[in-house]
Length: 186
Image 1 (cartoon, rainbow, N blue to C red):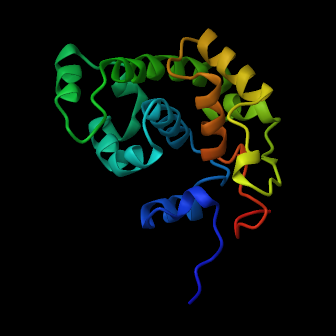
Image 2: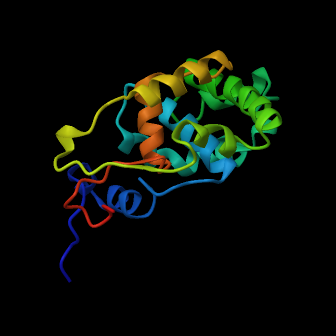
């Protein structure tokens, strides 16, 4: 059987192909998964997304399956254990950011009823579908990711710069940047 045409970045290996085919650009509305992806995008800063994907299951175990209430209460002992965990990216700033993000996330849930309601407001609760012909046309950030970043930072979130926010929007289907030739393009 012939391989489907995918976005050029997604052909490295089966892990990338599966992520591309089943997740990237697909609208996500589950609060826990939205929280997970926000933190994983932040963990990726300065690294390859492939590195994060390889470690994703380890992250789920290390961070209590992304239970924000538990993460918000992490102690110094837990932080030390995370820094010693070779299954995740052992960067103190990124680990501390996840704890800070858990607290901010819980506040957003209180204010908006769900993180989904809050985060999807930036795209008026509808995915933005782009029809780029080449991956080089895809922006690294937009005015919307700038606004999202600014608001997340104001609310106390960390590792949420505009470029990270745009990658997050792509990962969670808030924006669909599958190139026109890709089988996932709408």
